[in-house]
Length: 54
Image (cartoon, rainbow, N blue to C red):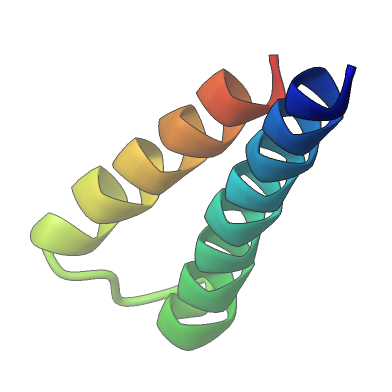
């Protein structure tokens, strides 16, 4: 049971960290004037967060 709880806590921590990266990028990049790489980086972070949250 302890291993299961530890694994769940670790998974939640990873999802929280991925979500924090998405929020940081959204705040940092703003809504306008994104470079060509920024939407890609944001999309990758968003997909990682969604994967972690599943």
